[in-house]
Image 1 (tube, rainbow, N blue to C red):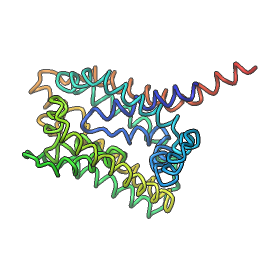
Image 2 (cartoon, rainbow, N blue to C red; image 1 turned 90 degrees about the horizontal axis):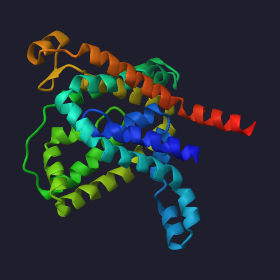
Image 3 (cartoon, one colour; image 1 turned 90 degrees about the vertical axis):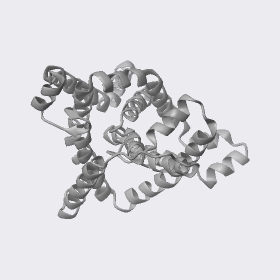
Image 4 (cartoon, one colour; image 1 turned 180 degrees about the horizontal axis):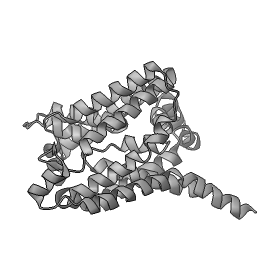
Length: 297
């Protein structure tokens, strides 16, 4: 039971990140060590799964798709989205500095662990730098404004879900860049089912295709991919620098000139809280296992 709880907590952390334009749930999954298992579970929706389903072998199907893991994870994601969306939206609008500082602490505190998971070489160092530069360039793109046709909802669903699976790149931020964030949120608020259905179709297609591509790359060149993904995570920090004015990065002093305060004290507190939370999540499995071992004696 405890393992389901820890999967749900990790899913909640992913959901919290997915709400914010600039943070990817894939980043949190990567940091928390469930990324490869997540990809494996997603790619298990294949012909074998259809055979189990058509043969009414539901127990075999559940085991094949790692159903308990996915259900716990997505349960946590949905709980976080529905329970924290209003709070995070409020923080983005009224207190962005502590919010961005919190996520900086969360990612930076886990970074030494990330880069210790693969063996360094000149080639992997090059991939690390390339990933960081690519992520920085993506985060500097200017958002578009568009009146989308239905096929654009399909493409937006495909691209955004791919970004959510890729550590460091925010799906919601890419929607902003494509000019699709407002049309999709409007469709959600108005319950406009046709564009939402098209968007969901693109997202499902992206989920099934891109998860297989990532898993294939990790199997073929595991350490090289980890180096590239770690670089992307580092480069994406450029987007969540705490002090921003109209999406432009500024110094705390410049921010204080416009907003009267740089909120440095709150930024430090939020950074420490983020760093503490990620350390707690990273040691969640050890804590649960320690309690279980103690109860067995």
